[in-house]
Length: 235
Ligand code: URA
Image (cartoon, rainbow, N blue to C red; front, side):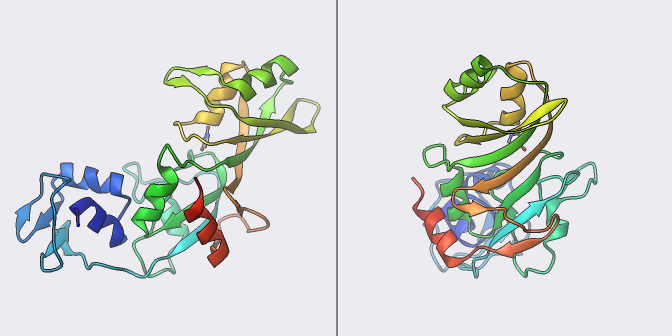
């Protein structure tokens, strides 16, 4: 098995992040630093990540968290801000977030120790629909909403078609439901900036078939077997 696949299967991180660990020189096999992501290893090899031994298969966990505003979606933060990992302390596994939400974005975040699962969900070919409620200042015109639906130009490329519906009106703005399949950095906020409107609050309410529902802010639950199975099938 390839070393990056082994690391992912062992629940350390996604395969993509395993490649980063390798390039950072944090993985050793039989006492030698690994430099090749494609290196093949067998069951007899001794693999260390950051000096700690890794065993082949860990029990897999799949978790839905309601991320509050003011938490970073990383396992540790150089600026020592609160991280989502501090909200899921009572699971005995090395969990990591599947993708990310901005510091100020709230709502549904999946965490797992199944690197292949994370890899599958984040792969550009399988990216699942993620639905957000964006509170937007001002009132986008039908033309501007059409532009969001068809795709807007961002500095890193044009966005793919999105599902966009105005769901609530306020004196100063609107709540808009927006579903996208891609995961560009700050994508929803940048899409609205591109049509001249600022998002002042952003909450993710679903990822594929998994709904945030009434999960209280800062709390988590295990995904159901059906939710896990459906996400694994997403194409
Ligand atoms: N789009 C954003 O702008 N921010 C997020 O956190 C997620 C999607």
